Amino acid sequence: MKPKVAFYWCASCGGCEEAVVDLAEKVLDVVAAVDIVFWPVALDFKRKDVEAMPDGSIAAAFINGAIRTSEQEEMAHLLRRKAQVVIAFGACAQTGGIPGLANLYDRESVLAAVYRESPSTANAEGVLPQPHYPVNGEALELPVFHERVRALNQVIPVDYSIPGCPPTPKLLADAVAALLTGRLPERGAVLAPDKALCEECPRRDSKPEKLAIQQFKRPHETLIETDKCLLAQGLLCLGPATRAGCEARCIQGNMPCTGCFGATSRVRDFGAKALSAIASLTGSNDEAEIVQILENIPDPVGSFYRYSLPVAPLPAKRAPAAE
Amino acid sequence: MPETTAPNGQSQAADFEPKIVAFFCNWCTYLAADLAGTSRLRYAPNVRVVRVMCSGRVDPQFVLEAFAQGADGVLIGGCHPGDCHYQEGNYKALRRYHLLRRMLEQMGVEPERFRLEWISASEGERLRAVVNDMVEKVRALGPLRKNAAAQLLEEATVR
Image 1 (tube, rainbow over the protein chains, first blue to last red):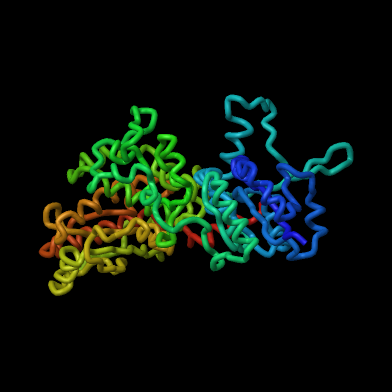
Image 2 (cartoon, rainbow over the protein chains, first blue to last red):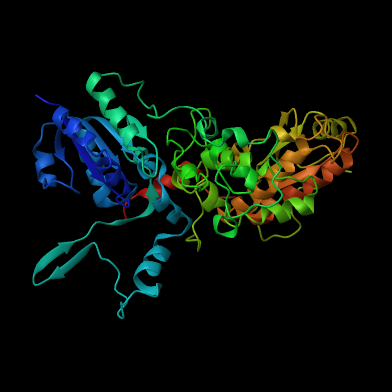
């Protein structure tokens, strides 16, 4: 009997599902080797089908997306029960991802922005989603919208994670191969190389011995040379602090690394470490000039905690303060 | 002259004693603290001093971790510009400080809670003034927030 595999999505954009589809013809090898028993984006299995499976009967569950609603939390717990191995698939599941930036704001502000204030919203009565709603004598239910966005391992124990926004098909194929052959590393491991992106960057040779950035530039503010280290061009590239394994895809697309692969095993907190790496490259010893150069990084949290705010050691205080 | 650590005003909670984690460099600020001691200068007992070899050794991760584990303020002390024992370490600290200060503000940490000061080995008096000033400013702000982990747990629960 073939091992059973489940895919599920939580607070995510669908890009991680795309990574599965991007296996292209390799997906046939995967399907030949495993039974996909649950994959809402592509296959018509329901929650009750999963509930009916014996506990531990799924070999591996790949869960992408962060956890914001009660439904996502319930599904995470359900899949944890049914699966022997749970893999946090992609940056959102691993560290909270882009949805995690919403932790800068409290729940009420998020709901107000989405359902009342955004210019494209037509909601004259200002209705907000209600967990319970009676209609024609029946009770309708919606999942509860939690106060904060959480990474998967803040909700259930996670065995492995595959980083990336989204992960590359190669990392997924390697993980499936490791599962099938039982060559999985120690529990808790990140299934990607444990070195910095700069080490596998195709522009590595053009990185100067000593970087001294006089002006930070955002990608739309400059014509980016295609063969020169992006930091040497003043772009905020997080390659020095980010785990490798993405095949430098953004760099090859002539865009700086935004850090979606997260930290290597030597780093506890990606945001603080990435900030440290970049700030140290400021090319001045004069305080006023340093301040001025760094002002060209207008949004430090968004730049350095873009994918990992929910797992930052210091939870952001949400604005406006709810206290 | 012993200085009183209690604020003159009566607006703050009387029982709040701020906890300040201070990273002092081995060559200047730590010696200043030593000098303050041997000179019998008294300053607020709210600082917990961590000696590091250089202010450039202070990883921003240390600062976040200190706040996360209950510090109400973090003070970094280093050598004056040009005086670093390792030539450039204090400039690295300065560059990180300015970016980290702004990031902490975004995360809801007031600027008074995070300071970088140049204090040389001969400036015991200045060390006292800086520590006392910071303790009073942080006292006026009140506690940073509840223990971070407890806060997360509480807020994650279903409403």
